[in-house]
Image 1 (cartoon, one colour):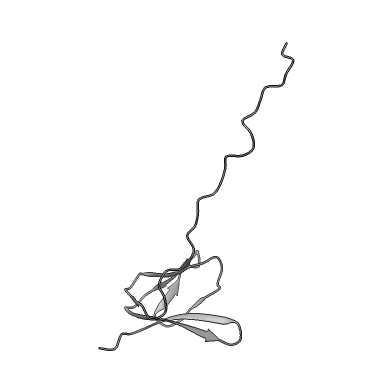
Image 2 (tube, rainbow, N blue to C red):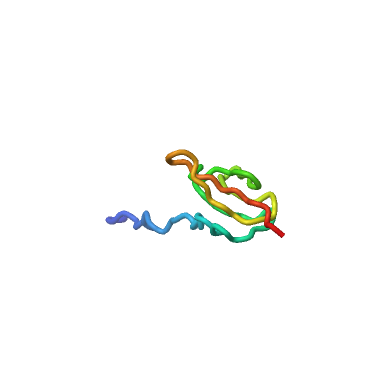
Length: 86
């Protein structure tokens, strides 16, 4: 009979992969349709003209143009894509 309990493998060694969230395209930069503008957790930024939101709250462009960040009210933030002037 063993006099010591068998050693376990420990409780460490698990960690989730990074999600790389944040602003991917800055204000004033050009973006193509389908280009990711912001990866976020929840709706810190809301989609405006020329943008749409994915099920994981990623905001992406649906038209080609220039990215602009706008303030809405006291705490709201919105992202729009304005068509580029020729």
